Image 1 (cartoon, rainbow, N blue to C red):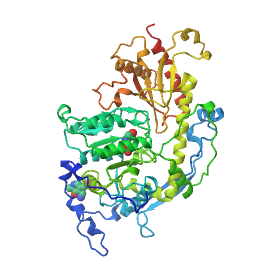
Image 2 (cartoon, protein in one colour; image 1 turned 90 degrees about the vertical axis):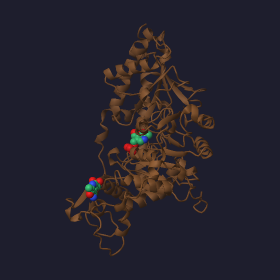
Image 3 (cartoon, rainbow, N blue to C red; image 1 turned 30 degrees about the vertical axis):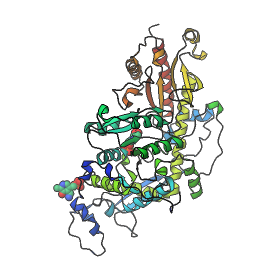
Amino acid sequence: MSVEKRTQSIDLSHHLSELSKARATSPLKGLMKYFEQPGILSLAGGLPSPAYFPISDISANVLVPESFALTPTESSTSLSWLWKLFGSQNTTKERTQAVTIPKYPAVKGDINLADSLQYGAAVAQAQLQDFLKQFISEVYRPAFGDWTVLIDTGNTDGWSRAVMTLCNPGEGVLCEEWTYPSAMASMIPFNIQPVPVAMDGLGMRSDDLENLLSRWDPLSRQMPRPHVMYIVPVGQNPSGSTMSIARKKQIYDICVKYDVIIVEDDPYYFLQLGTYTLKEDRSPSAMPSGKPSADESKRYVSTLTPSFLNFDYEGRVIRLDTFSKTIAPGSRLGWFTCNPVFAERLERQGETSTQSPCGFGQAVITKILTHWTYDGYIRWLRGLRTEYQQRRDFFIDCLAEEFHLHAVPAVAGVWEGCIMYQASSKVKKSTGMTEKYSARNRTMFSFVPPVAGMFVWMRLHLDQHPSFAPGDRDTLETKLWTKLGENGVLFGPGWMFAANAMAEDPDDNDSGHFRISFSNVEFAELKKAVTIFGRVIREFFQEDL
Ligand code: PMP
Ligand code: PLP
C-alpha cells in the first residue's frame, strides 16, 4: 500500500482499561518538553550532572554483520557435520570492529553517555527511535499511517503493559490453546483468564475463533466477550507453527468483525527457516551475495511472511518486537508498534515502572545498529536465520538417524496438509536389536518440522504405550519426561504450555507433548541428547511386555 493510500487508525479508545484511563502524566515527566527548549536554564529537574557519571567512554568490539554465512555452507555433506560435531562452534575466528561511545559527543547528535545515562522521557533515545522507524517502515510496512513506536524492555514487559492497558479484572484474553506460559502468568493473577482457541499446523484456527466469538454467552462463560487477543504467529512457542498470509487475513477480519485488539508477540519473526528436507534430498542452494546492500535487504525482506501490521488498516494491532533473539536476551530491549492512543497510554505506564530502558543497554545497542546501518542489521538477521536453519536440520537429521522416521502427509486433524514424521519403536539393524523389537513395532512419536523458530513440538503417541488407559496421558508424559531427566536430558513437558491447564483437549486426548529446543546446545550435545532419547523412549514403549 502506498503512503498516500494509507488510512489513519480508527478510535479504539473504548478498549482502554479502567486502570489505564486513570493514569495521569507523571508531573515531573510533563516538564521534560521544556528541557529541550534552546537556551533554557533548567533548574527544575533532579538531574545529576554528567560530570559525576563515573565512565568517560564505553568501547566494544562488535562482530561484523556478515559474520555468519548465508547458506548452510557444505551443511548437506557429512564432512561439515563432522566438523560441527568435533570442532567447537565457538572456535571460528570472529571478525570484529571497534566502536566507542564517548561521554560527550564530538559531533552534535552523535550517541553519547551524557545523554544516554541521563533522565529523560520513557521513550527511546533519539537515534534508536529513528532507526526503529526506518526498520518498521521497510520491514513491516503497516497499513495505517499514524503508527507509533514506543520502546520497552522486551516482549515480557510489552505484553504485561498491554494487559494492564487493555484489560480489566474479570475479562478473558483469546490465545492459542498451547501458548507461552509466562504470558499467561502475567495476567492470571489479575483475574484475567486465558480463552484458548484451537490450533492446527498454521497456528490459531480461524473457524474456531469465529465459532467462539459468534456464540459467546457472557452468562454461561461468566465473562464478557473477549476484546483482546494474544498471538505468537511465527515459530509459535511451543508448537513451532507459523501462520500463513491467508490465515492471518482471516483472523484479522474476524477481529475487525468482533472488535478485538490483536497483540502480536513475534520474537521469532526473523528465524523463518524454510521447509525441512531430509539430508539425502537436500541440494546446496546458490550462494547469494554476502555483503550488506539495499537490494539484498529489499529482496530478503520481501521473502518474509508479513506481520499482522501489514493488513492492519484500522490500527487494532499492537506488535511486540524484541532484541532478545536477534542481539541477546540480556539486552532487555524491545518496542511496541501501535496506534498513537495506545502508545501514549503505554508510555504513561512505563513512566511509573521502568521509566526508559537502561541507558547503558540502549547506548550500546543503538551504537551497534547505527554502526552496522539498516542494511548491515538485515544482513546480520539473514546470517542468524541460516545458523538456526542448520541447527534445525541437524537436530532432525539426528532423529532420522536414530529412528525409522516415516514422512507421511497428515491428511486429517491438527496438522492436515503438513508433512509429518513418525518414529516407530523398531530399532535399526546396526544396533543389533532388530529381531527383538520388530515384532512389537509401535509409533512412539510424530512431529512436523517447524518452518520457523527454535522448537520442535513432539507429539507422543501415548495410546501406543502398553499400559495406556484413557485419561492417562499426563501421567505417562510426566513418567517419560522424568526418565529422560534421570538420564540427563531435559525437554519441555507439554502440560506446561497448555493455555488452560484445566481444560480437556478434545481432539488430542491420547497424546502428550514435548517441546524440544534446538537453539542453544552444541551440535555434539544435540546428537548425544537424541541418542539418549532414543534409548529411553524405546525402553519406555517396550516396558511391561
Ligand atoms: N524516588 C525518589 C524520592 C526520587 O527522588 C527519585 C528520582 N528523582 C526516584 C524515586 C526515581 O528513582 P529511579 O531513577 O531509581 O527510578
Ligand atoms: N514471547 C514469547 C512468545 C517468547 O517465546 C519469549 C521468550 O522465550 C518472550 C516473549 C520473551 O521475550 P523478551 O525476552 O523480549 O521479554
